[in-house]
Length: 297
Ligand code: GUN
Image (tube, rainbow, N blue to C red; front, side, top):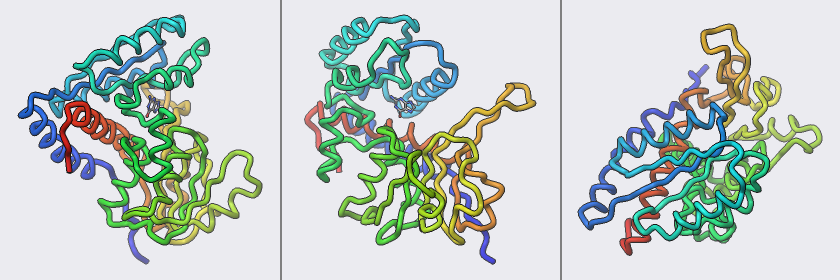
């Protein structure tokens, strides 16, 4: 039996970093200093870890970054005022407000307030519309990162049946939209299943490529995958554990159980997670080039 391929993101990120460093250098030679501002509201520890990693990634590539941390009781109006200020600051090319936000803040209002040109998450309806119509300005970070993993490991989704588990605006829906595009490393037949799908395993068993993004630890079991399938695990679930931290990070897939059966699988951690940040860097570079009137190939 063939060995299962572990789809680690490290070499993919390293190769993207080289490309991104060169692009940042090119922009700087044209007097454009790519710059990202990340806003985080509240004290969610996991979100603070992700935001710190975004700042570190910027630093590594020479992208200017700023993190604005606001208290958990920040009113929506104050956050909207801050976004207005960031929108009009010409030295800032990308704006990201970390999700989830405290309950007094309506995330839709925040997404709508961000200038679509600076929307490095690709969450604004303007950018979602461009993606759906096949003319994207920005790529949704996590889904685009998954496509980069597939490209790096030469796993083409063309003509394959991809089953996406989850219908979030961050992963499930944009993932499906990317993979049905009429272009290279897309052209897939896509099924989206979710929490209200009856007999979900009947669909997942048919997947050539299974993308699990449902936020349920160890939901996908051995009997839910097809022999030889490629499994992409987007889950990053904290579960209680008897260790120093008191928790462990696990995916949506029972990795040990499905490992022998599948042909390739992303690990958690070290799989999809770092790709989101790499693609955020790419979007910041795209935004800086666009706002500086430069075309990148
Ligand atoms: N929270 C978890 N993932 C993301 C992301 O990609 N963007 C934002 N803004 N918040 C997140």
